[in-house]
Image (cartoon, rainbow, N blue to C red; front, side, top):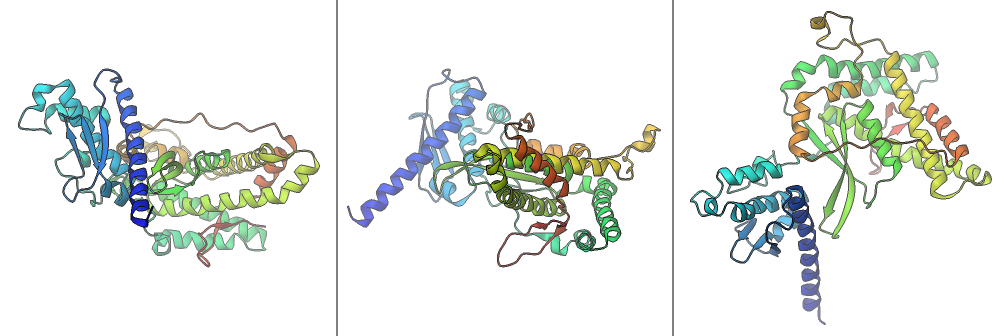
Amino acid sequence: MDFAERREALKRKFRQNWAYSLNKYHAWDMRKLNLSGTVPKVTIDVYDSEVTWGFWKPETRVIGINSKLILGYPWDASLGILRHETAHQLVSDLYPKAAESDNPHGKYFNLICDRLKLHPVYRGAKADLNASGLPPCNIGPQKDRSDDNPLFLKIKKLLALSGSPEPHEAEAALTKASELMAKHNIDSASVLAEAEDFEIWRLPLKSKRVDRKFSMIASILQGHFFVRAVICTRYDPSVCEDHKCIDLIGRPANLSMANHVYHYLDERAESLWEKHKPMAAHRGEKGIGAKTAFITGLLHSLDTKLTKAERERAPIASPNAPAQGGPAKPLLPAEFILADEKLDGFMATNYPTLTRSSGYRVSDASPYSASAGRAAGEKLNVYRPIAKARGVVKGYLDGD
């Protein structure tokens, strides 16, 4: 077999895998609409075109998806076009008279789009896939804007002092920086409510599963750093596999801070486990169970520490406290971000089928490692950002 034949064979194999994955999503939509077995099956084909992103042919029951769409845009865009064509299919199957009308994107088409929770970008006859509002909106980070954000620069200077050898100076700087970040978000609530600057920063895990460490880091980010964190499964057409990722959703300044913390906690959890590993082995605790117990204890302790610090901080008045006629209510980061109605709308548009997890449980299978992890978490400091060096992603230094 020569090079051209091998290339064509590989091309066919990739298209088969893409069509198989698109079929899975189509079947999932049919189950979601309670239509499995009710409407005839369809064939999904991957084709080449310079004109259309997709098509539906009722006479052959074929949905086509352009290969350029799969290769050149996020997988979410392929799913958007797939569901657009699925809506056409279901109009043909459920409302055949409407399908014969002169308006293929009329009442019944939009009714099915509503049931599929399809974004307006994908409902028209022509989809502008280069529009800035293409959902999921503003996948990034396109640029880490923390370096030209005055608030973040001020916090950086204060946090640098938290590494001071003078304990009182370090404590004062740390407290001030933490208060400043919380106060900025709450004081700016009315301004932020009018801003359309939400972004999604997607952090690929390059794995088919999410271990306890990443789910707990996502929980910490959502609980303490003014962002939402969503664990997703996204198909990667370049390798024909489903991979997990964490989407951070919020405003750029908060996303910059959360991004720092994510990479820092990932690195520190691994390095502290490697340091503890020989001692765990000496106690007879080995393997993934001991590692999970240690890292769970570490991150649970850090989570508890951050929550305690926030509750002990001087109360910051809720914007509607005066109207209630009562005392000022402390507004924690998790409470503030969950009360953001505009962010709720953004989440509903970009994650229409989002469900909440049931949380995590601290493992007691390896008690020595779990205890050591909790002790390490109590000493962990996530407040001093460092700059990028030699291409290494920005992180945080602890206070050791």
